Image (tube, rainbow, N blue to C red):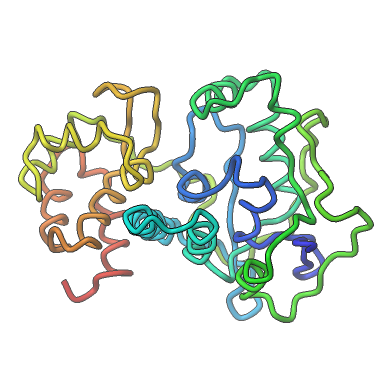
Length: 305
């Protein structure tokens, strides 16, 4: 299946297709959500932006959407693991937590992928592969963007659900061929078409991420006490991974956090009310810079709390 489509005369890729293009090695699950929420790995060369069409206008997907998507993905993953469901079933459910109408520009995806995962001078890329256990000499053989991956029928439906009338780009490559390899040079994308409407400024710097100790102190008493928070944030459960901004190990000072995602997880799982979380963002020094982000998330997802 060819996953490249045309939107307003420019090549694009549905967001749901990206994990299939990389064979779920990179840019999948919570990592992909982290990229779009602008809280990806340290040292990123360029942020990757997801868009959708609003009345025919190319519009940035609100960053706060990805906060809830990350929490939803973590919840689905934990449920599937608890029920011992097949990996293929989890993959489909994980794709369905991504927006069906979301897309990225193909040239921006190619540039981001090459710079972030294939650039030998990019220390964060080397660190990432060390963390996930991929040997450096195997990276070129394992990684690539497959524009025509072999996809089961039910996955095809999920990927193109939001684009029923969008034409595919005509590619002559054979199915499952690697269109972008890690041995290829990293080319900068062409000058993008202007985005007429944007919900979030693309280069806006977010609040400073929160350390584990500050996170535990700030949320102490919300479902867990301070020491219990330290232990929870020190494990490798799926919801914890979805809330991390930076991970360099398991010590208190080795992880940095997006507190909005953590608060969203608590509310979504029914552990606390949204207004209880809001009170912490209003009073705790480490969380006050994130208050506006929390208010936006709360207004979008829990307007009656």
